[in-house]
Length: 95
Image 1 (tube, rainbow, N blue to C red):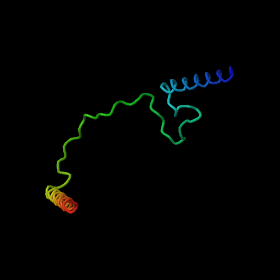
Image 2: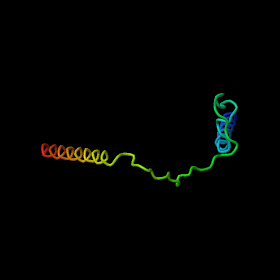
Image 3: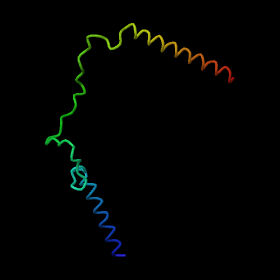
Image 4: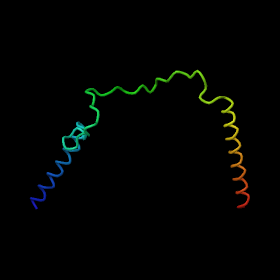
């Protein structure tokens, strides 16, 4: 039993070392895993955070012309009304 306890303790120690070591190194940097030969080199310093609060400038013209937007909105309203009336008719038929 002493041998089994020793093996269990070594396994737990190895698992703990791998878990804690994972915090400090990347798996891709390990020599056995590595990166593909055609992968770009990594920068020495970590990149900065993305500028999530910087908004792009306003467009000079609308993405969708106003006439086309009105047409799309009218089609969506008509589809919503058709679905509502079909649902109401289905509810009446089930009662």
